[in-house]
Length: 337
Image (cartoon, rainbow, N blue to C red; front, side):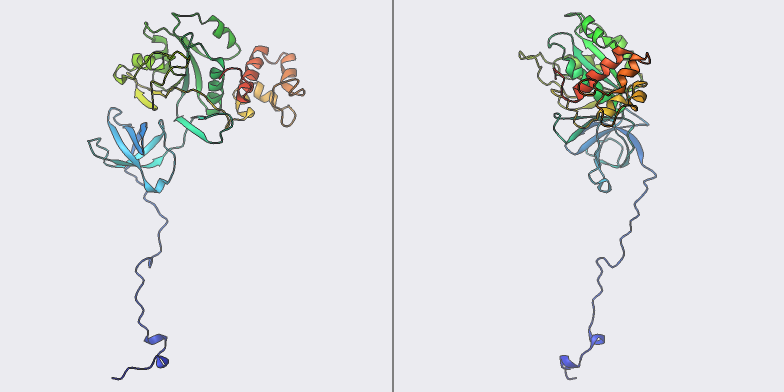
């Protein structure tokens, strides 16, 4: 059979190989993972998450983030769903396939100009602000900033004053009379029974400058934790004795999240309205303020309706003063960090 010239060929003579790759349309359906196991994220370390199973909180499982989650952030306190090997045995790895919506979130930025916000912990019921009465001296600006972050994130703040054997708490207590702020006073040589009672059955995040006695408190509350404790440095800001956030189970129920010692608490991500909304009564009155009012009063905001609200007897001057101090802190006009 003689070979035909290419001029005599048409498309019916050309053999086409099937394109096996991509020949079937890619499905957008994803598995629903109906058999996934519910868990709480209790630790994060270099792309691996330690999770405590809801069914057995003592059973810890190491997990990775499933590919379908992409870059979905997962932090301590997140409620997640796991598939794969959830036995917790050595050298096993489960997958996080779902992250539940967060009920609360504690965020901070490195400073007030940093646009990148960091999620410290998710789903905590309360924020315990640990402050030493001495050694190192209390930093009221830091307390105020933590209060702002708690109100904006949906957490109930609790002020914990440590080292009461070294100084009296009276001056600090008087400064927060205008707020409905629970306060617990502790000392290093006494069991923190009142604090333990407040934490029972709840997820609580502890924050504070290094050296204020936060890790010592955690060791009292969860003896098995054995968090490192250290002496306060001579410059007034203690060296960091906790290096990563971790959720620890409390006897009888509840979790305490010990966070690393924080040197600064930026609030670049929080607006004035976020702070005002945490003050019922004042929040409603603020709706009568002129547009773009910062609610600081004269001379910054001479038309602020909150002044008239208090003058007419509908609100407490002390409460308004406390609100404005927090607003100044959010705006970076506090005198102490």
